[in-house]
Image (cartoon, rainbow, N blue to C red; front, side, top):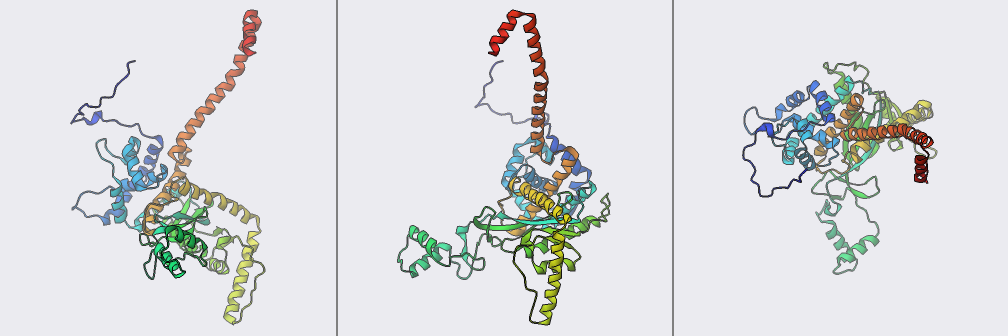
Length: 468
């Protein structure tokens, strides 16, 4: 075979027939996912939900809503954290272009088009698309909704600590530090002097009440999971402990405690389950989609939390931290009545926590909730966000977790939840097949060598020398 050479100066043809354009056979994972979406009318639902944001006749046609949401789904399946990477990947891959439904001669949407579509489509519509995926989970018997595990994590914000300013004066951190150094006696502090002074000064803290980032005011100073201090957002999952589906992916301010943000996540989960339950088009029995049990770790434990859970008829399985012996007395009659109610709620939760059912639920919570964070954040590429503003991040996060739920459907239908998992499984199957044939043929080969050595002494001597 002759070696081909690349022609550098060759003039490309101006007209190319569409039949001669390169076409991809398509990725089997995306082909199956497209069949699932098309069977349920995904594009029609997206277009009807987004129709109110566009003019009927005027203006240039935008990115179709079905294509926009599919590109955000690709962000999860291809582990792409930013919209620019999503646009580059879709422009480079023929199989992804086929998943988006683009013709061979059509250009793929760029990141600016994704940004415009995200700004135009409101948060409620993104929530409606997430609820649409929950309805498909219910149809595939992958949504129970009675036992929810709740936990929170952090998202590193697209803002730097060096850019924070004082709320009262608008001073930057360097200007604030220079003023303190001059007041302590350093007339013209250098960068090295400021760094040394900052390390040694007493009462050093960076409170969200005093500092904020002007580029992303929603980002709050918080300690991340790796122990570093950074501007961040707080994400919280309510996960179905029977199936592993994410029922409510909420984004909260990073400086709010677990006992505060839990109620917003529970409300979002209850609204989503009600939307699934009341939709007559869902071809499944959804009458049992009511939250009954809430399973959390000790960060959510408080007397007020347990009292509120009982008031809304929810059984709490909340781990209790070691606070020592508690006092249940108060000075006024009203406070004493609440103390008595709180004491009974804490003791009932403590009795439930000692039971076998509670231990099983906490094992499921530790497995499924942490797994959702691993797939969505660390493996899914969204541990650090590249958007600003909590609403923008919530829009992207809703569709990202919707892709995680679609992966559960794909895993039930095909055995694989991601395209990469499909490829890894095929490679593992090929390795197992090679190992099987090797294990099957090796004894036969040894037996053949042994028979040959017995029949031909000269050949047997050669085999013995080779073995030695």
